[in-house]
Length: 108
Image (cartoon, rainbow, N blue to C red; front, side, top):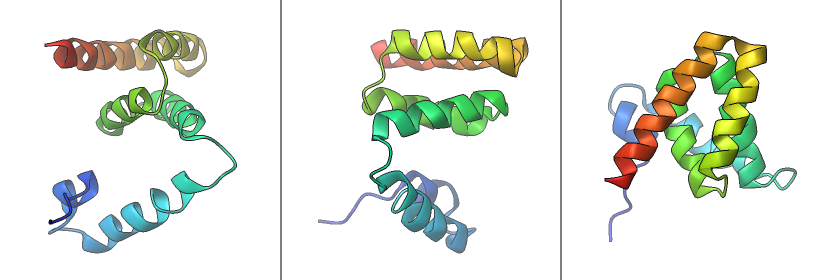
């Protein structure tokens, strides 16, 4: 059975194969698999960084991954609300708006 392409492969596999290889093998193959933090904790740190840096393109997939890695909707809402005071109100509001759309879309 053929292995399903990763998200990086879907987005850039034919355009930037080296970046896709580094994403899949180094970032998600090594960094995300290190034993120092659980996947749940890595997701929380990553979501926090993406909110603080206002990176909405990457935030959506990492919010979904955070849910899959055991963070609850309530925990993510609270974390983003907390971040709004440190990262800026627009970053927090934008992240929560995007998260709400994910939650509502997945509920349907």
